[in-house]
Image (cartoon, rainbow, N blue to C red):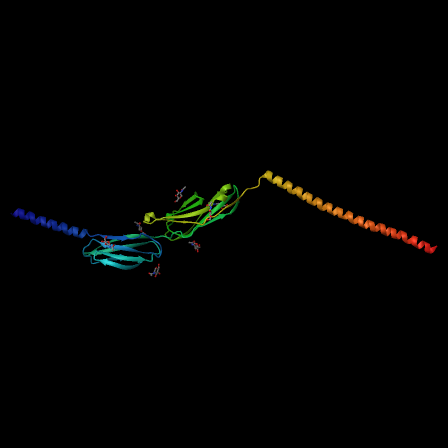
Length: 280
Ligand SMILES: *[C@@H]1O[C@H](CO)[C@@H](O)[C@H](O)[C@H]1NC(C)=O
Ligand SMILES: *[C@@H]1O[C@H](CO)[C@@H](O)[C@H](O)[C@H]1NC(C)=O
Ligand SMILES: *[C@@H]1O[C@H](CO)[C@@H](O)[C@H](O)[C@H]1NC(C)=O
Ligand SMILES: *[C@@H]1O[C@H](CO)[C@@H](O)[C@H](O)[C@H]1NC(C)=O
Ligand SMILES: *[C@@H]1O[C@H](CO)[C@@H](O)[C@H](O)[C@H]1NC(C)=O
Ligand SMILES: *[C@@H]1O[C@H](CO)[C@@H](O)[C@H](O)[C@H]1NC(C)=O
Ligand SMILES: *[C@@H]1O[C@H](CO)[C@@H](O)[C@H](O)[C@H]1NC(C)=O
């Protein structure tokens, strides 16, 4: 009896110990957020919960604006808002004088709202270089951004960024290329893609307005020679005709003044003859 009773007591004691032990360890805290990436000014819900049956205190610790929407003993649901930069939110509960906490990182992204493409120069000869310059103001995070420069549907250049700064940045990509004869029939564009899939969001795409390139052919050397010859001949003919006009004009005037000369001579000849009979 005695050893059996001893066994029973020991078992009870052991089970009490382990029960007490598991009672201390078993309490957990969880944080669940509707979003882990938000736009500045957005609002979303965060559920802060625990497995502790009777927590003494608990809640959400954050620098963001928070409003308690609903609560029960084991969870609290908040509406948080006004995030302007990446931040960490903490959820904590105290159970039997022990505190546990969990935290969650919230990223703030700035979608590419504006994509601007410039072709320089926009009037270019076949085979000559031109520059595509794409600018996206105030975009973040750059590590999720890809800028693609396109001719029609064809990607001419892709650019990704290593930058880890969380602040929105103005980004510019330039790409030098040469003009093809058929480029005049294509639209050039720039596409910005913010891939937020790792942050439980979609890919956000934005495309610039289409830009066109005026492509012209450079006149070839032999064509140039023909043009110069034709222009020279025309110039020669023009100058010659002007000179001929001038010469004819002079000649005509001389003929007319010559006629007057004859009349004058006739008159001066007739005067002495008319005077002569008077003297006779
Ligand atoms: C909050 O989370 C707890 C634990 O997951 C869950 O039981 C509760 O229903 C949630 N509350 C809301 C409002 O979603
Ligand atoms: C939002 O955050 C800014 C600073 O980031 C603060 O000045 C402003 O008071 C906050 N607005 C609200 C409604 O909490
Ligand atoms: C959360 O942010 C902190 C500091 O901002 C960083 O050290 C940590 O690695 C981040 N954790 C995750 C899971 O992204
Ligand atoms: C360029 O980026 C786009 C979009 O991210 C991708 O679909 C494409 O495969 C990339 N092309 C090249 C040549 O890297
Ligand atoms: C980004 O560009 C805007 C104008 O588009 C300018 O006002 C701003 O200062 C620029 N920001 C940076 C960080 O260069
Ligand atoms: C493109 O060409 C211009 C000169 O035409 C040069 O200043 C610039 O550095 C070049 N850019 C690249 C990305 O090669
Ligand atoms: C180029 O863009 C203009 C304006 O959006 C459009 O009318 C035209 O059809 C486009 N041309 C081609 C070849 O895609």
